[in-house]
Image 1: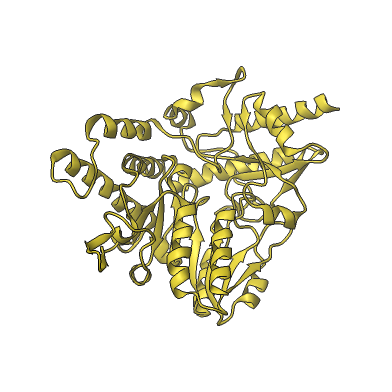
Image 2: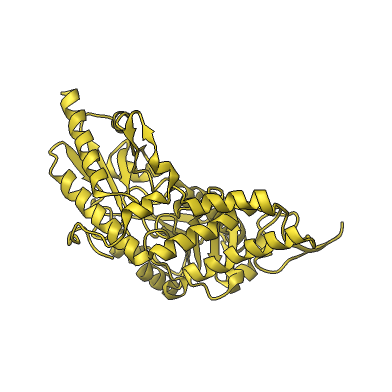
Length: 417
């Protein structure tokens, strides 16, 4: 990945106009202005082929999967399992049964905490997370540590928003049983050196969970090359539907873990005296799943692969470099998170103006940004902030939209002064 300290030329090889045409929502006006959507770290917009796939399922072959023998059930099952195969390809997993469908990264982390944590974390063990984690990668581990009488340790970060790797190495010990960190920060955009983090954790005998919510749509992911034990992603941050996510887990670990929920599909045989469990991946997929959205997710991944993750990365890095240069020239802006390696996230504050007020005034100009603590309150406390304004970029964003953001910020300052 390119660094914002060595920005690429502010050009792109992508046909952004045709890409934008694939997203119906971008054609609208908000408050009398063309929509500028810079809230992609919260959720990305959906291309037409994803919307069409959702409609097609309900209009043409709506049926429950796996257990039916009729034509509609068979078609739905085949489409559902095709998405599993596509996820395997997308993240380069070794086995298709290592792909578990969940509602999102939050559920994926809770699944690992409840199943792996309650089974294999013991009194006196330690779990290691970083100071920049989303609440979803903090709270489940707090619960497990309280329940199992384990200890939660936190890797500090620098003022620039980078993990202190020296401190990480000092915190690692034979007591460390699990390390859980994000691939990229939702608040700062920092891309963490997860390959080194994973390697060193394994040397200490720990397993590693990676929160990939902010990375999978922006940079290539190869779970075998990374050698992570668990990797989590959410479809709705990858141009796919909400309510769908993936837990990747190494097969040997998943086989050791008990089911997360009880019900249909996760069983092999049930009596009132005894229950045996289904094989992977179905052991972790109790009940009727979110069929339509899982099927539509494959079309989001196809869209990403057709555009090309390398092309997406180049374009988004160009956007980030351009936005960084433009906002650094504004005397009233203080950028938050200046790591050397970042995805397309630009967080900032304006002294004396609450982030919420900035967000509302930008919305009046049709510019959608995120404001607040971004579900990273411990990170905000570390940085001495109540919150930030966050502009996050996707492949359909343009340099002209960044100019509109900068113009909007200048007008806000002139209006308030």
